[in-house]
Length: 113
Image 1 (cartoon, rainbow, N blue to C red):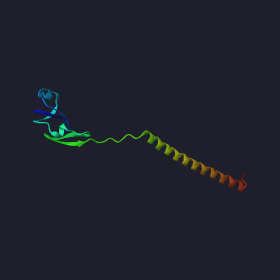
Image 2 (image 1 turned 120 degrees about the vertical axis):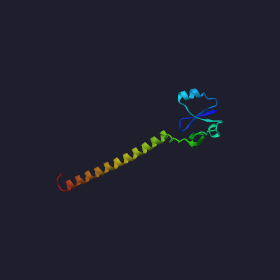
Image 3 (image 1 turned 30 degrees about the vertical axis):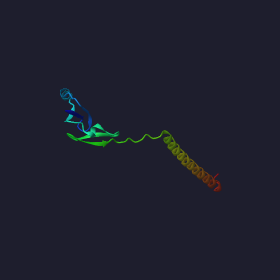
Image 4 (image 1 turned 90 degrees about the horizontal axis):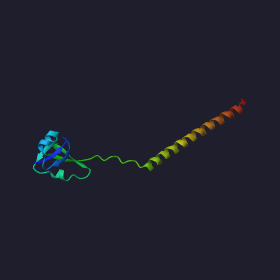
C-alpha cells in the first residue's frame, strides 16, 4: 500500500513503502491507496493538492503575492508629492504677502503709518 501523507487539509507528499509503525508513532496523518493519484503526481507550479476527504483530492491555486513596488516609482511618487506640497506652500506664502501688502496700504491710506 502507498501512504498519501497530509496535514488534514493539504497533501504533503506520499511514501511508496511506508513504515506504518513509525508513521503512527510520529502522529503522521495519511491515507492508504493502491496507487498514487495522477493529481498528486503532477502538481503544476503555483498549485497545491487539497484533501477533500479520504481518497479525494483537488488542485488549489496558491495566492499570488502582490508585486514589490519599484523603488524608482516610489521615489518618483514621493518627488511628485513633495513638488505639490511646495507649490501649495508657495501659494499660501503669496497669499499672506498679498494680505500684508493690502493691510499696509490700508494703514498708509488711513494715515496710521
